[in-house]
Length: 411
Ligand code: G3I
Image (cartoon, rainbow, N blue to C red; front, side):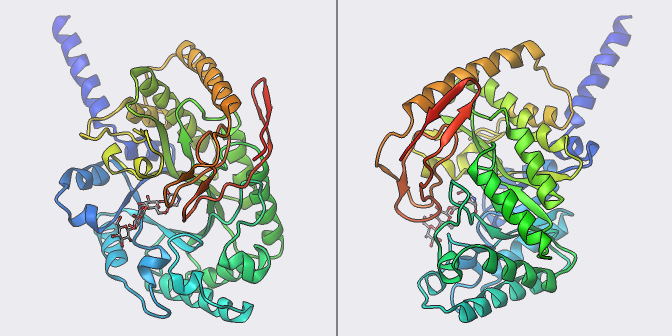
């Protein structure tokens, strides 16, 4: 009897340890992705590479395929870093999300500050999209064709593209048509953040995609970045993802991380585990959600502490590459084993609502600007309302509804 128990325990332990993020994802017909770049692939930190290969089956280049990296001067393409990522992924049987073709951030100054007419900027967009996608034709499964084009209320973010074309429709159409022509087999996505709850931005995305698709623009998928905060994953995360999926026909979670104030507490780690499960499960529950990309592996290499002072700890491995509860949270989201009981989940959701109330009531803390490349705005936002340069333009003043709380936010 004792022998049998030991054997059973061993079998169970082997089964558990054999499960990886990618095996859990595959069991639900999904992929699970991470990010890399040449510094991770060729650098001295071999652990990052090992985990990327063992646990993930999709990859995005964190920075190497952005416009400033790949076409720093007009017609002057720089392929080394992007080639390194593509070759590494191919050699290791990983599929690739191409990130990203048309984005206002990490945009070289020759584009951002050029003096363009519609016609000349059309040529620039078409040339960039065609050249990049043609080089990697058949090698990149999905492309973020346009990225972060909305402001927080769902209108057009101010950028060189929206200014020259007088809105979103025209340049988005140009970019997607060029993308389809360059690689008809690639899944073409429109990608943004703060699509994690119902509200103006998600509605703006759904409306634009429906309108353009009705006009024949080849948009295949909406990417929801999902840069989330511990304890504040909205109760409408799942339904909002579903509406994005329906509008485009397909969707994906493209940049998942769930940040906390640092150092993260043990209850924070536990809440983060639940939040990861919630986010991943939302994709699993949708037949047309393609998969989930986690925006990094280890907390020590995350973009977050650089941008959000005092925050981080957003990823499944800590800074010393120990698996956090978040790891099990992802496995559980993909239907693997999880120790989280319904009762614990309910308690956590209540805590989350309390936290949300505190944060939302405290609201906007005033006119401090975040670091370059920051993101700001969105549900529960209590951080900077502007940033020196880059992604962040705080522009929403909107009515927020969350659980029983209704707070008017004006900025
Ligand atoms: O290119 C310069 C280099 O010349 C300089 O020597 C170096 C010194 O710091 O900085 C380099 O720029 C860095 C850039 O990445 C390219 O490597 C910036 O400092 C760094 O802040 C920047 O951060 C990236 C950020 O995008 C820029 O917007 C992060 O690594 C990357 O994780 C992050 O990813 C974005 C997604 O693309 C879009 N959605 C939001 C997400 C998080 O911001």
